[in-house]
Length: 99
Image 1 (cartoon, rainbow, N blue to C red):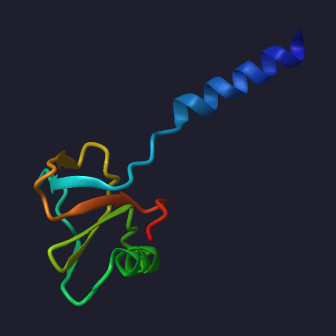
Image 2: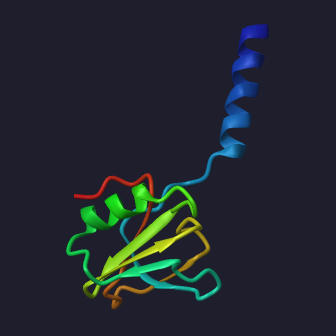
């Protein structure tokens, strides 16, 4: 019984602290947290992720690629993107796998 309570408690803590990862969200940023880097020389989404991963200060929490541009953000996709299927930009949290 004690083991079950500890397991349930640990699961509840993990669930409350965890947030969903957002990958491949087509849209536009809300404008509240603009990109801190806009790079027009990056040619692929994986290269954009690589640029994002290389930033520690400021920390890159998400990135967008599209229209020949790589955008880096210091906030996650959740709450920072207005979804739109007609957008040329696709947003990814930094922990997403991109191919």
